[in-house]
Image (cartoon, rainbow, N blue to C red; front, top):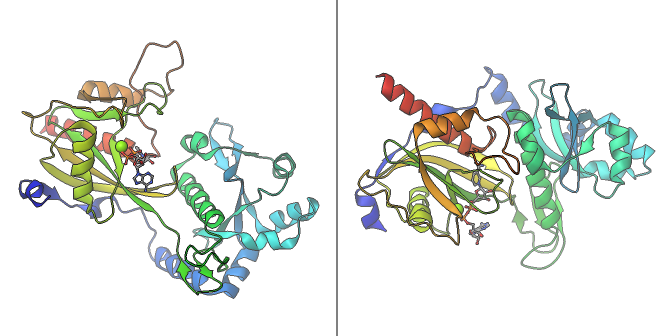
Length: 344
Ligand SMILES: NC(=O)C1=CN([C@@H]2O[C@H](COP(=O)(O)OP(=O)(O)OC[C@H]3O[C@@H](n4cnc5c(N)ncnc54)[C@H](O)[C@@H]3O)[C@@H](O)[C@H]2O)C=CC1
Ligand SMILES: [Mg+2]
């Protein structure tokens, strides 16, 4: 592997995409969140005055806006309490809420899965619908999509980590839901994410996009893959590109990262990479990808303008991942860099 990296140019410029933060509020919110994770009583008190995003079997409660987009229905805790009482649920369900964030007004934000209650009854009480996150994510704004993705990932982690993998005994969560402890051995479990690399490869003029057979009709995305145990980011990138399309990378530059709740919980590490224009012949591994192709700047620019996915019977058009996906960001960055270069 060392030989592969001898000629690989790696540029790390991680500071360019920091999320916007308003002055000192960010620091106090970060410290408040940390305290709530460590202090069960403080977390319980915050829950009483917090907002709760409801889920039903991991599908979030959403409401349609007048513009046809979706928004989550964040309910204040007292509203959720009333709904639970009306549906004859005992009060202990509320304590299963999991901390997911803190609003700019310093209100703690929680998520709660009410999967044991009747779905339609909760929907009627809360004037919303529980919808599959994968289908609805793209109709939500960035901040809300992020909170719901985090909520779904944490709720799923709790549902699948109720027992210690060493002793088989039950594990118990802290009030914030940021960890679980084995009742017998004391082993502490923290929520896990799988690192995944995602890369937009360019040969200088074109970019490389691939599609899996499970993708929606016409959709092509940046190449992605799970990191193997022991691999660095750049090792995983080189291996994935070699495996999936048979190319050797020349340079890598880091772009940004994203938490992604599908299929489980991944930390997507987004990069740009280049290959030599003299070595662009693809050898697609069809067990991994249905297709992979080089696309021109013009093709990608027009695809970014397509607003609705192609339907059955429509002529085939290139359809790119939506704004909420890091693949979209990588593709947009590539287009912008090409346009800037042509203007220089
Ligand atoms: N947010 C975004 O813009 C995008 C996100 N993705 C996500 O990236 C992820 C990885 O992409 P793929 O091409 O599917 O990966 P991949 O190329 O590594 O192939 C998936 C296979 O890797 C194996 N694998 C190894 N470690 C695994 C682990 N920890 N969890 C699950 N499977 C593991 C399994 O056999 C699985 O079938 C997908 O979950 C996909 O949802 C993919 C493209 C765009
Ligand atoms: Mg892949």
